[in-house]
Image (cartoon, rainbow, N blue to C red; front, side, top):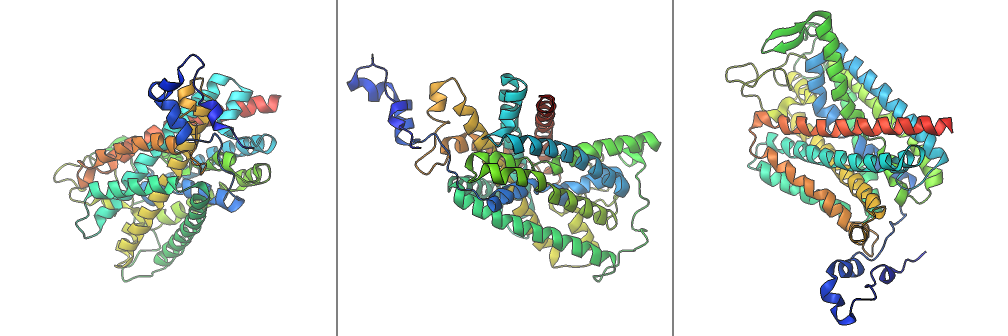
Length: 454
């Protein structure tokens, strides 16, 4: 169905015709640039799964898993990942059940709006948009961070600027090309994960010039002593270990989130009633299984007291055991490879991890822009509908993409941070993502209970 854009931007009848151009520039902009109100339905099932998988697999398992192991030890990290996967599994099954019956555009906003309250639907939309904006910023910093490991003069400022440009133009190129890129990215990430699984097994079996003991003498035990203050236990014993696992679970939640992105594509899917239910039911299982296998193998190969992985409970003081350690080398997979004496792979893996973080940030910008576009269409303000709620002639919501892209400037907060402090802005921004997302999931679960009661 073709929409009459001129009808929406027609000036009021009491406005003189000769003054319309000078008195209503916003409506002129909506008429000339953002001429459409609908998205383009060009995403096939493989595009949808590519966008969802690329958004779900970011930098968490490759970088933040080191923080989880340093806090909880090998067993504590595995337990945390199991608890986090159970939560995500339950939420995604609930969403899959609802979308099977109601495969509408913007289902994450529609479900609480329809089954609970209109205000809750609007709140979920705002929080989901904010969460993905923060995710985009943190992943951009992480992608730029890995460039600092390479022996070059590429500054952090230049790396962030290039990453942000790639994100914007990657989303502005049109949804069909974007879907094709994400499908390719999905298979590249699957290859990275399979390669890491094989590599961890091979290193544990004795591959490489260095030797990783198969009897677990690499680590002083399966569990850490508890929370640490400096190098001394602050909360030890069973209570400290329980609190460690709880803390690790909240950190691991960040890594498992992203499977719901498959529902955001409803407005641009060719066959939403056929493709969305199937993708929503099964797409999230692959990241969950991959993460559980990787964290198990990683715990068998890395020492959780190794100073090269991120220890948030140890102050970066001069003379401490973390002093002088490069941030980009704190990926636990890179630490395992260095211990095994394999010299070529660390730089290659850093490039793979940078690629993974950048493509996940690309998906985060896609999700935030489509969420903002949907909110703008439902707005009672005409100037919002005529700008953010419009698309160009290629059915791309450029205004929504631009507004969602603006928080990316926060990535430059990491420029002034030293090498050892790059993790701090990432750590804060991931909390600003995880907190709103947990609230969104709680609202979706409430909507599911109301849906089932009906």
